[in-house]
Image (tube, rainbow, N blue to C red):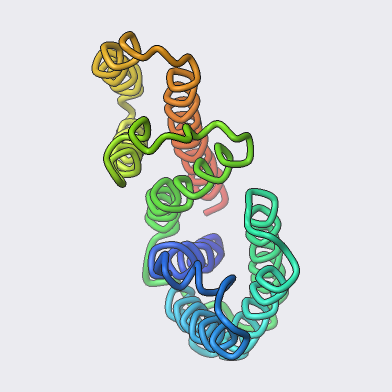
Length: 244
């Protein structure tokens, strides 16, 4: 049963973040209505198809329609009624997960459809979702949080190479999850120490305290998100193991 829930989550994370280009994410807000509807329709259809494949419950085909319509409605409301930003992002994601939880509960926990054993182990899907989550979803959250608090430096020269910080974040969070899942927690301290040493010279030369604070906040948010997701995944896996 848990495998099906995390099949839903994996499909959402991949469709909403990994397979959605930055261009389409922008056009959903800026394009004219017909183009906007087209982009949302294609995105929602892809989301529904991914969900159907990832949950691997082939008799539950009505889920295709429910996910397609609900995803389209939630995204359309967001792009038409709400400005972009942290609050809109959190509300949008909350609404999607409410739908996911509701469909999972109504269709499978309550037994509307007979549950077929998922081809993938629940522990694998839980950890796979954790690795996906620490990539683009966490990066988007950190960026929106820093923009919301107006902590991003205004000068482009102070922001480093394009996308370099994003890839550093990807790598450090993947390493943190790997340390947690392999029970090598000491590695997290080593990683933080190593990053601090490399950043020390840059921060010491900086004359703007805001740059130092920006780097520290971004680093701590990145580490905190990865650690919480990692230990959360381990906790859910342990509960699932006890129920099996």
